Image (cartoon, rainbow, N blue to C red; front, side):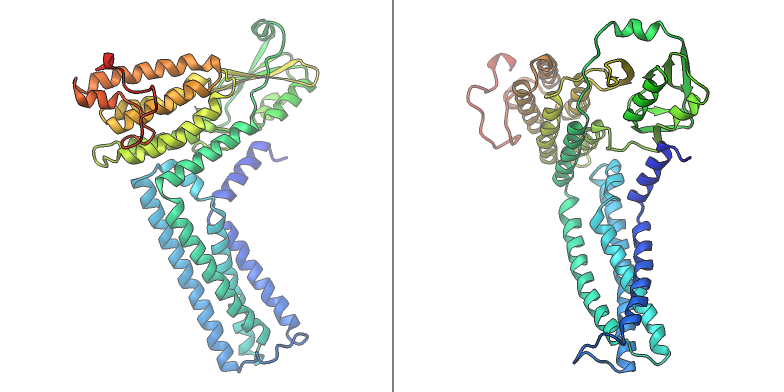
Length: 431
């Protein structure tokens, strides 16, 4: 029986591959050509008849054009890789490969090529498929529209601000799907410590991409166990590392069963890891702050969407461990999770480190933190205030006293050039 982890990895591979859907398109085009040939004698198109020479020329041109369009899309793909590694984050490429429009366009091109190629063989036998030639012409028009849509997507979706907006939406979607579980009653630590432990080792080396939480809870309930994961989604583990501690009398085959509920891969994925979305946004922001790029305006745009993502995280009561119970309220699973402080540190610390000398980045970052201080749960506000103090100290260490420091200690929703919120001007004591 194929494990859940193997099925998850297969789905990830198919979603990221650029050949699977176009290959299906090739088979679909050949199958449609066979259907067309079966219908040629039953469907007539008055005024749409072709000579054998004309039909052959048209189908040959269509097939050649599809090869050219495939080459164009491949060329664009190479440009995407160069742009991502140069101005965006290489981590974003994992998500770009999943673009559905790109795969639909490639599949349509290969389907039209296979369709035309099969009909060309029929013309060689003396039959002129009038319906098929007409459909091939309509397919070319459709493919040109798909190409224009794909080019539009390529031009607009790969701007840094568009990538940040997409990452923020993806991260917020993960947050909504994974509501933090309520802790069960009783002494949790004592419940975990009083039972014998079986250590389930990692079957391979890689990043934890996803965990089948519901299946783990069901397995633990069925055998009266408590499972405690040692690593969170996104952590990198090595083969043989202790992955899961099993509290209770585990039956035979427990290790293999539980190993199949934790999916490992070469790199992180965003399905259960909103921190990965934060990581990508921060990568783009600090790359824009590098002396080789020197583009703090891009950093302020990243902070805009980073604030939206952190705001969604700060509205949740996050802890460093998630506890899940079965339907009877019995603790069955403990999973390491990221606290609000860890998310905030991930989102802010590197931007503060590399942007302390940029008044524009500092002003926008301080404004974002002030907004978070007002919008997050009260229990999370102390961490935000601490980050504001760290930002102030970094600016004072980086920028000498004077007007430039006073400028950097201010607040501005545009970084520079925006309006200063009433009552939120830079205090003189910080100059």
